[in-house]
Length: 115
Length: 454
Image 1 (cartoon, rainbow over the protein chains, first blue to last red):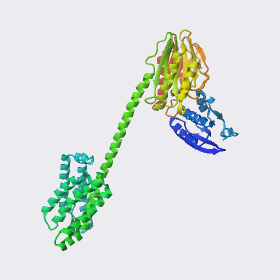
Image 2 (image 1 turned 60 degrees about the vertical axis):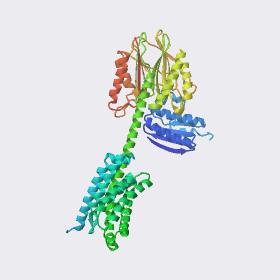
Image 3 (image 1 turned 90 degrees about the vertical axis):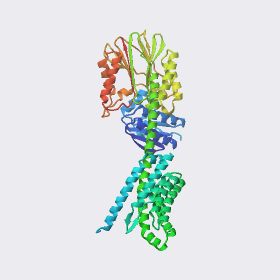
Image 4 (image 1 turned 30 degrees about the horizontal axis):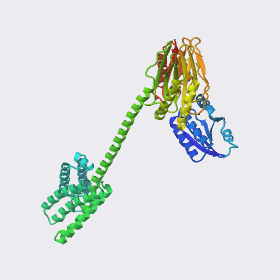
């Protein structure tokens, strides 16, 4: 799993590349937790390079969301492949997350947020 | 003597080989191991004293001629004896070598035999200073060099006539220091390696013990978890029911359950906890118990699971969740009233038309949100209808090209085998999955359940 991090307009963006299986999920969880620990509350995850997600991957997204909600933050998801979107869909997680076609849209949606 | 240097080197190599062989043999004895382990007995002490005393005597005879002078390694045995066994063994070996040297006579016999005894004593003092820990190769070589220097000083102090002692020391000191240090180097090297090997072996044994214990604990966890699954498939009037659960590891996060709600109503559930292994298994135990406790008390469907969700969510730390399908099978009405909390929709095969219907309903996995609303749906089961419940371990099983088994293959297997009994249907589907995966290991827990209306 390749994990790239960058920061645009005070939004932390994590780009994932690879299969988000149980093993990769641990890596991703560590990265997101590190961001939250450093004070990031607005996070976008770019799923462009993810062709497979397991329930462990969903768990990491849910755990991050739950953590961020406590500090008035949130995590938004961008560029999901149809199969990955479907996994979120089946679990009913489309009710929990905001999804965006493009990374910039997700970042822009944070405009107007109070820090 | 056309090549004196080469001859000298050859002699030296020969002597060293003898020392290496002696060192190897001694260090492999049971008694030496016992001393290394600090398990001192009278027997192993005496034996080591005798062995290193013999090494000292051998050292006296096997002098090496270097630069025209005759160097011996009689101090080597007692030094090592002291370094690894302490003062008693060191002095013991030194006395044997020293007494032997004394009776050989010569004008240096007193300082030489005294030096041999002191070599054992000083080795033993180093041992005590190091609290029994072997000094290591560089330390041992330095000790040997210093000891032989001291040996030479003793000769100067004690041996008479003094002028001859000076000659002896001038000729002998360098070869003596050199050969004893070299001999010590090989001995210490072998001992150090042995100590390291034994440490590694000890760590490895500990690791394997730990592994064995973990495996045993997981085996117990597996047995406990299997006991959470229904002991037997209930015999239902007008219906044929079967289930199968194959965790990918010793324990897993999938489960199924049958809950007798009333005389003609039975709760049927299949669920999959996020992730796998021990964390999933613990969460599975929690979820299964909460769902069962709630279902036993109420004949409802959506409200039962919504209540269960509230309890599960309050315990769902670190984002754990469980997708769950819960249905009440009404034996009299021949209906299935269900909710789907984010689970892969079970597949219903209509016996009459051969069409497949996905048992979808609006919902969300349990543990994600405190308050959820689950859509409740009801279907009628006619004779020949088959419902296959499964977890994603079936559809997400992969072959060696990482292609997934997928829903299409599952649908095909259901269509082809709907005529069989419920038990045979799930066995067929499981066989198909296994043969599709080939040699690829099972990554996720597999659970299958089939309900057939007779």
